[in-house]
Length: 347
Image (cartoon, rainbow, N blue to C red):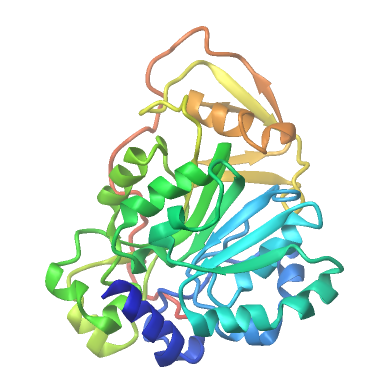
């Protein structure tokens, strides 16, 4: 049901973002100026059929080869094409012909606007990336925006993403998660599926699947509780809380299961465009320029063994182990809804 329903819902039922019944497939984060400028150079027809739930703009993307899973009408791909620049490239994969038609229709328009052509779109199922002409260990970054919840075999998506990333590469993506497992009876509902709810992973299952795929230390970047404005949809999922969340998954084999303390620290140089004052690795690591910042061994590797290395100074090594790093826990990572229940809707 998943692929067929996705094609129908996003190709036929939805004609624009105003047709959505929840804010699951809406982006709330305020973009940095660099991203705002890039969005101004995306064709209006592409933006009109955008259904992402997060801001997929990983930092330090210049010169990177990027894969966009479930690229839809192409907004994220065309945004990332500008961040990657003429030395980088973006490949978008999507299974919905109507969405691909919109994305491809404006290839020349964007190439003229950017002054270079570095985007291509491939029709394919993100559950079958191994059947496409994509070479293992050939991408620096993989992104996805509110799409993994729509597929049945999520574990395979994570495994294939790990295979396609270069060592030190990153899977940076937003999706919808649930505080508990969604009952099987709801998973077959076409509206709940199309609205990104019935396929939402229980966060604990996501953590397990990501680690089994080789992403040993998933990092939560941002999250928000979802608002469901349609009474019929809200009634169907009553008792289940849903969250939109953005995660970083790094392909670094040396990452440990826990955050271990080796007495290390980093200092941010302030050299990432759009993030000159501070760099946010995840919800627990807001690293200000020039300030010494204590880190666990895993965070050290996420900065030192990736594209981010040139933007930091590194202090210490792995010669002495001081035990578990403070704050490493297993409770649900998402924030609760505000007490007033005043959750802003999508604009």
